[in-house]
Every structure is written in structure tokens, then in C-alpha cells.
Amino acid sequence: MSPTSKPLVTLIPWDPESPEHRERMYQQRVACGWNQEAVGGWTEAQLKGKMALHWVTLTDANEDKEAKLAAHTSKYPAELVPITDTALQLQGKPRTPTHVSFIPVGHISLDSELEYSTDPRLVDVSNGVYHISSFYVSRALQSGGLGRATMDCLEDMATAEPLCAKVLTLRTMAKASSLDENRLKALGKPSAPKERLADIVQGCEPGLVYEARL
Image (cartoon, rainbow, N blue to C red):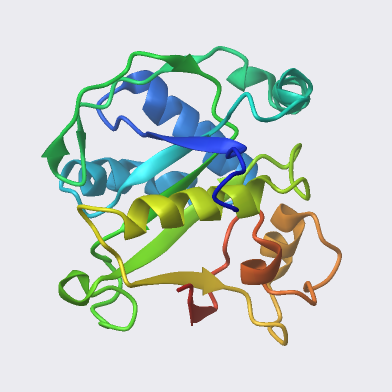
């Protein structure tokens, strides 16, 4: 994103203590195709500051914002009702919620600790290494630049104070990888994609290889 361009998306923290936020996250993970059963664990990880899950929301820089929201809610009518920014903490630190109402069209997390790995190449906060995970953009809105805009927004947040991240890591799909049928079906693709998700930056990450983002 150029310094003069207006961002297409903004990130609003997920509130793990809100039933509405938890239900919406579950709905979006079902739409994503996997990890809906992990939402309970994410609640604890968010409260402990290990994860920093954010909702992806559209800004007014989208000239067709209302059309995009209509496309999203038409495909996922259970997400028609807005939720409210109520998170009282983020990354283990207190925050003041804005109480703004919004309809999220995806979500993404910046992790400072991983449950499944202690590899410092993936996460090492002492050396400014953070991990991007749980990335999803509504299937009704993919291939429209929102995935890249989300990544740009997250990078801006991560590299600013107080985190001052030096490296972001991301689970991606190898070009030569073969996916199981369920994951291919969830991605809506008949065969393994030829491009890595780090290149097209859309949908959920199957997590087969690791690649430095910065």
C-alpha cells in the first residue's frame, strides 16, 4: 500500500469474551472449511495474549462497499447482523473499545506464541519474529484485493510500536504440494493450486510450509 492510498480494510480486535464474537468466528471458520473446533482454544489464547485475532472490515475507501457487504451477507445470511467492537484487551494489554458496529468479512491473527511449535524461526518475540495465522477472507469477496490489503494492514500494525516486528512468518501452500480432497473442496478448487497462498493472499492457509513475510 502506498503512503498516499487509503486502506481498503481496517482491523478490529476479536472479543473472546463476547458470545456474538465467538459465534461469528465459528460461522466464519465453518465457511472457511476447517478449524471451527479450534475457536474454543483461540478464546484462551486471545485472553492470554498468545494470539491477536482481528476482524477484517471494509472501509469507505471501497467505492462499492455496500455492494461487497451485500455479496458477503447474501452468501452468508447468518452474518447479516452487525457485531460491536467490545474487546477490552489485546495482546494481553488493556484497550478501550470503540463500540462501533460492523460486519466482518474475514479475520486474521498475529501470534506471539504457538501451541504446536517452539521453533524460533516461526515465532521469537525477543527477536521481533511474529507469526500470521488463521487468515480468512469471505469467499464472496476473494480475488478483489482484500487479502493483500489485509496483509498490508497487519504488517503496518506489526511493524509499528509497541511490537516493532522485524519478521512476520506465514504458513503457505507449496506449489508442488498435494492437498487432501476435503481441503481442496473447502478451497473451492478442483486440484492443487499452482500458486502459493503467499502470492495470491486469499482464503485460509493449509499450512504445509513456512515462509518469511518480511
